[in-house]
Length: 304
Image 1: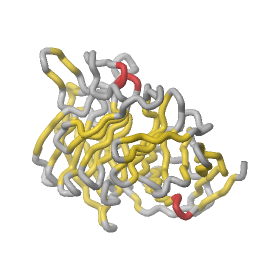
Image 2: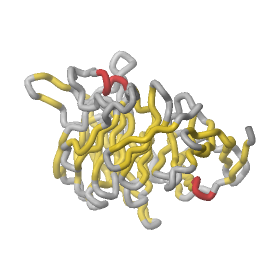
Image 3: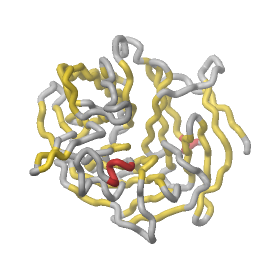
């Protein structure tokens, strides 16, 4: 399989903003914003396995939104929620913070793990997007796509009937379900390994089949792959090509009939020629955002 080396230059450096902070998550917003979530410190896992939803100690989260070439920094001090996702919402006017986990305590007591803030730090609303969120992305039409890992599908943290039981849910901006995946041809999402948003629709790669599904107007179309367990995918707008990230390898594929066929391997390099080793990766449609140290790199697979 052919390998192609691509040299990229950083589009932004966050060295100053990262001082004293640890990067948690990257995202590309609905209006093309580059988003980074940082925290003062990462809380310990429960029994070394599960992240807590709320912690005894508080911390400051820092959200960075890069829009039209300008960096906007938002600090959220004295937070006890354990956040994992950060994106603009409400057509870019407000900010969404969300935890991947949410407890169901019984008797209707459900943790509201999604919280919407104004840009001056005022809490505007909160709601629950379910437990076990692996992927989250806000759409241009102001919905929220969530893909769930196995605990979110099967139930954990007190959930007998998990909100993420389908594996893939599209939410309204106030926390009501707009659409959820229905089993199609015996295809069940046990774990949504990878997800990206193209326009207002979603593409996803899932266990157990490891095929790719595309939502379109309430229906889902599937294509076969030989990629087993990619954790990120970038998709051209016409769906003709997909770039899969599997570990630190990036596989180019092309759609042929009902399947995606491997066409090559991409290797990204820094301006000095050294291999780029991204700590964090995010996608939206054909865009691939990577973070190596304090530097952000952006690649559009449409031109490949």
